[in-house]
Length: 396
Image (tube, rainbow, N blue to C red):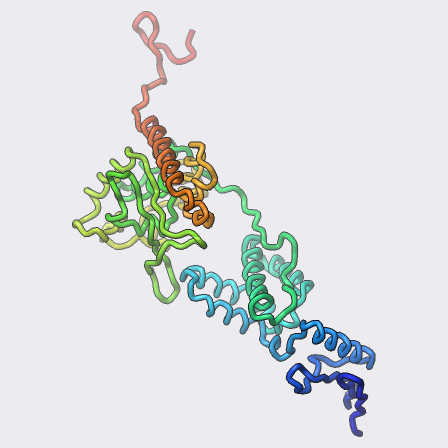
């Protein structure tokens, strides 16, 4: 039995042998295109044609063939087309896509992804035991992918990732130490690694930044540390050196206390062999770079921080500690952003001379606190009596 075709003013509707109705219409190029789906009722097919014609009139029509690409393929292409991402960021994006997006949405074409579908995906991730922080990261990645499909490639009219608050992480406040606690923690480590701990805190450095510091980065006369590179662990490549780059921020110079510089000079004289300007400040006993994966075995970090009474303290919390100590000097947000190497540093560079002066005030403030912390404290377990003897504190 031949298919029955109903010719309209624009487009056609025909009944298929299956009994369902198919809509076809000419695109802007004149080529006849079938609708991406069929309908049980004829009026539903006709309604589709009416909407498609209106979209063409408004200039909003999108070729169904262009949005037939799957989420997996489009997202993988999206990642590949961003060569300026740091290696570690690329690695994280690929892992997140493969682990938390592809198993759930990978085979769905981008044109069929809806907000309810995104909502169910998030619920499923949580049901499968994925942490709230990781769910937020996966959502942000997928949202960025779809924004490219909307704004740059013009494949979609709207982004299906439109769930209020889904991009937010609600992690608890990380711990931070006082300067006295930092110095006490430093003393629990082997001498070779004591300045590694102190430098991360006093200069607010990330692990990859502090372990990549070289002799040439230290300006003794100015009392500054230049931060312009970092070590990155990249799957398949191992340890690689990359530039310091956090959004708009880049290399930075951090002022540190004069008292700290004196300790760092002593460390360099003891543990940095040779006179090469590129010599690393912090290495293993064999002179090799310190890797994140071997840090625990090398230093006994977990056991030492627990012994100091700071169970659960991460190395990155030393940077958080440095930021808190700097903030206590009365520095402005812009001053802190510049010191920390955050995104808003680029805008704050307009006031570069102000930032340098503020950074020096931060260093002087830390230096004063450091002098107090390093000054030997008297034994206050006993006090002298007026008769030359000693009595416990609190004695009458």
